[in-house]
Picture (cartoon, helix red, strand yellow):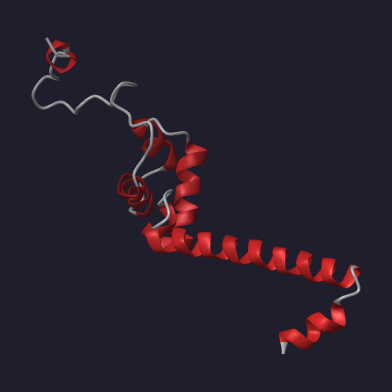
Length: 121
């Protein structure tokens, strides 16, 4: 028998019980975070939203602050493919710039800088 079937259902007309520890996600999606933040924006208290979702108040408050600054996009923890590509490209450019600077320093130390400058043009 599944764990769902073992739980007694709430009496009709009563509010559903808050989710148990097994029902809570380990990682919250941007959509679910946004739903909690929107509850705050609609006027629900931080304590109530935190208690019902079983997320620490400081974390809900952080999501609220990020949402106000960046909207739904700020709540995503994974970068979009374009953003990842941009980060990788910047890292590669940085690596190549360091290699070029090291190579130029080495050329200068060996006394070949005049020849190097002529070839660069």
